[in-house]
Length: 115
Image (cartoon, rainbow, N blue to C red; front, side):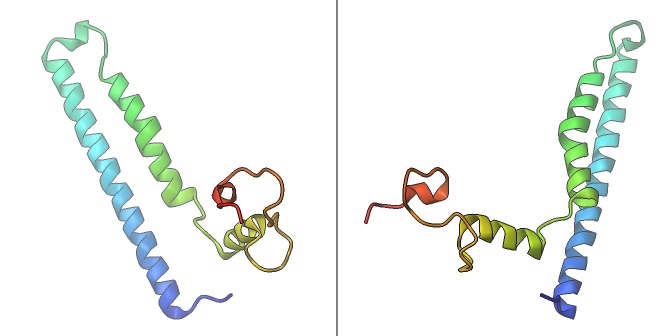
């Protein structure tokens, strides 16, 4: 399936917005953490434990890294992934999926009412 010019443009706009949002998130991260370090330093922190390390590491590991991965490393939802998921669910009509309603099943298909 080939993407049309409009689809490609829409995807490019979406990617640019995601990159802009990530850079905004990164700037906020830097600004807030600089502010926390200044608070630590002004309140005599140079003689005490460096407590700003906790929000720096926490926000970095659970906020910045996943956001970076989704914007720059994640390949998004591709047609190939859609087809594989449809095959897995048995909903594409090719008969290559797990389809059917016999036996005990788990997942979304298990919530079907009995016939």
